[in-house]
Amino acid sequence: MSTDIEIARTAKIQPIAKIAESLGLPADDLNFYGKYKAKVPLKYINEEKLKTSKLILVSAISPTPAGEGKTTTSVGLTEGLNRIGKKAMVVLREPSLGPVFGMKGGAAGGGYSQVIPMEDINLHFTGDFSAVEKAHNLLAALIDNNIQNKKYSLNLDPRTITFKRVMDMNDRALRDNVIGLGGTGNGIPRESGFDITAASEIMAILCLSNSLMHLKEKLGNIFIGFTHDKTPIYARDLKAQGAMAILLKDAIMPNLVQTMEGNPAIIHGGPFANIAQGTNTILATKMGLSLADWVVTEAGFGFDLGGEKFLDIKCQYGNLKPEAVVLVATVRALKYHGGVSVTDLKTPDAAAVHRGFPNLEKHIENAAQFGLTPIVALNHFVWDSEEEINAVKDKCAELGVRFAICKHWAEGGKGAEELANLVVDATENSPSSYKALYEWGWPVEKKIETIAKQIYGAMGVEYGPKANADLKRIEKLGLGHLPICIAKTQYSFTDDVTRVGRATDFTITIREIEIAAGAGFLVPIAGDMMRMPGLPAIPAAEGMDIDENGIIVGLS
Image (cartoon, rainbow, N blue to C red; front, top):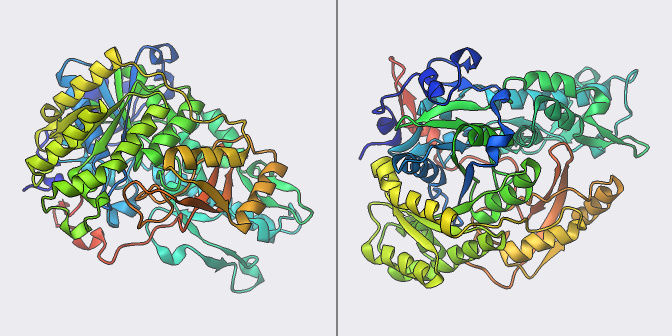
């Protein structure tokens, strides 16, 4: 069987100028990054066109460690919609190098449902991640410089600073460290650390900004810490927002590429959904809706994470209204939630599929809470048995939920035509009436508990000592009106990674609550969730190589 990278190389890639021409975009207006990638100026966002285009959200069941194929399904669905005569575009997030070289792999889709050039997209692409990283670390440097410079000091109390540095790599050794060692010339020693770039507040800001000036304003709103006399300090107090915005002036423009079947695709922004909001930029989604009649977009991990945050945060900030939600499921994930070990997921076991179905059923229920019409897309694998597939099909029929078997990995758009027709049917005959889960003006605890109880199925929420102190600080700063972006494991509805399926009789424990005032949300951290992942025992990087002709192998 061919690998993803081998399949991607079989595509007849077109110059991106030709793809742009099909959208009515003049080549002179594009910022080209070689022959096959370009940035599109924000002036092509058409607010009137947004009102008539249809937005489809792709989310998923709680995943296995390998992921269930949301990006692949998003690309396949887009190809399928185009095959049945719809003018459709896929809008995705950019891959992070952490998962690429770690365990999960890239985020360009797979098989015959990929965005290309696959190697470029999964690696440095157009430099957006680098720009976010540099803007973030510039602010970190300015903070420590201000502490060091007594003449112009803002009197920052180093003990109150929570703003870390970032790097786009999985590296557990950088989670917690002490900086400023080596004498007075090297700064003031203090505890700090690194987050992964996808967890950067700058990444979240990029994804939730509506313009360059809006971006600059949000950068200035980043909360840094307190002075020794308890005065709050923001990035604007360091006059940091202008220089940071300069570093992001190109990164704010969405990136235009293409699918393997020659349809346009936009890829922009890359926050994770377990530690951030998990969706591409508002600007990219609006650009897609301006240039196409149908836009397919995805939100990271299961519906309880990326889906909820897409609907309660991104859609509220961007005034977006999805028409339907596709829930990607796999037989292997259902067996995983039915108690089968990761090593045995290829062994046929229809009984385990039945046992694991309650996890998918909860995600279906959650989509309905937002007034959305759910459609289950079973991402097909060659080792899936007919008995297992029929078990999922029959369960969906019992619930009255639209169901499609999707073979887009092997067949491209042809393998997703059934799903495409169901999506069109859902928007025409079962229109959604999207509504948010909670009101932003509610107390912080009520918002957190609403998500925990209604989306996760928890009995309640417990707050640790630091979280209780954080709640008081949030109220003191007047930030209680912000929406909630819970950081939680993606593998379970609970905050315990081992409790798969549809858990009951559990509470969510909030360890602390980070303030992302610039991005415009609060981040309650549940359980042992960390914002800097580590590498697995055998990283994917060990299986990668490049030859003397520049041909890459092992990238997926």
